[in-house]
Image: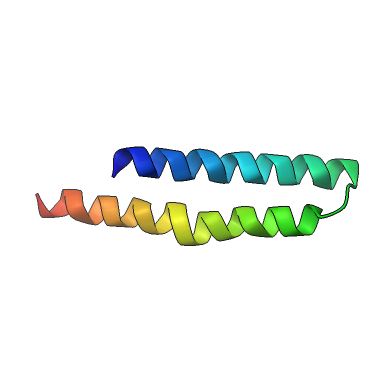
Length: 59
């Protein structure tokens, strides 16, 4: 669980960083890359974080 959380977190940070670079340099597809990063954040990192917090609260 922890490895997958770190992997998804790294991928989200990487995609958002690449999207920010594309945004600053005004390259094409910047909107789609940033959107994909926020999708990873909203549907990957945040639910995994709260699930992990919920599991540790039950112990």
